[in-house]
Image (cartoon, rainbow, N blue to C red; front, side, top):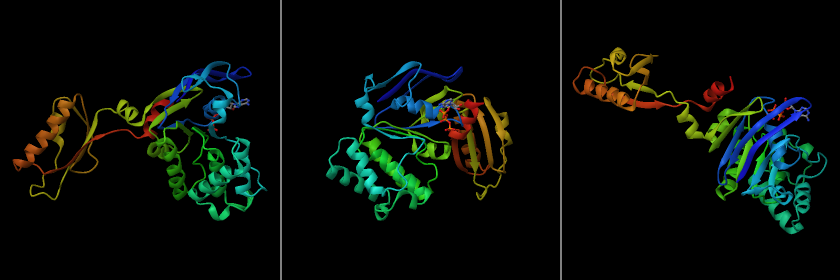
Length: 308
Ligand SMILES: Nc1ncnc2c1ncn2[C@@H]1O[C@H](COP(=O)(O)OP(=O)(O)OP(=O)(O)O)[C@@H](O)[C@H]1O
């Protein structure tokens, strides 16, 4: 587990990280999201020791992180840093050797990664001859070649097409499933929503929200529900105006006949709506219920809410 605790950092008189703290738990993918200049890259650099903090600590598996720990983290920095004119496989092997691997082990690891990332046929080509998306895959291979025990990746999905996102996701998931903590930053909230187990939202150098994806969605849910009736039923009465008179219910919207969005003061009030809808259908005074679903906010909605 990587724990960032009370980290602050200024550049000149500008405070860019203010008491930042969060955990990256082993076996889970943690998405680190925030707008431009929010402080993601600075935080990641501090985790890796590329930059020092003014206050606070980074803990690794329960102790203050050491150089040796950092050497075992797979880091994909914002400034990508592979050599444009060197063949891809050669540089991966070189990086593995820098981390103390034998040439044979580094070659085996690099070859397996290139294969997994769909770059096997480009292994002997120079980095600069690859498309930007393939260069990005090579950068990911560079972060993983030394078989790290934790991953810290700055925007690993930027510039990847949907197929490549799936490939990279599969590789990162494998790492997480082996117990590694995986932290990745991203501007693409739809990707984070789909990929991460935990989310950390940063804005203006402060942590604005953090928790499991499901926990955050539940926390920010307004107890909103959607009721949809089936207009093809024998009784085609899809009127839902009766909802407004139900105790503890606030009808928010009825975008089309037979569909209503409402909030409920309590779970019981919501259940009463369902019971009443089913009862109306059985009694022949209302159309059958097609669905009854709690509406949870998307990560993009939560993000807008906490960042404003
Ligand atoms: N070396 C530096 N000197 C001065 N200011 C810096 C330095 N590095 C970062 N900053 C400032 O710190 C703030 C946080 O930057 P950081 O790169 O960490 O944000 P970010 O969340 O990664 O943004 P982006 O998504 O745009 O990459 C920004 O206002 C940036 O201008």
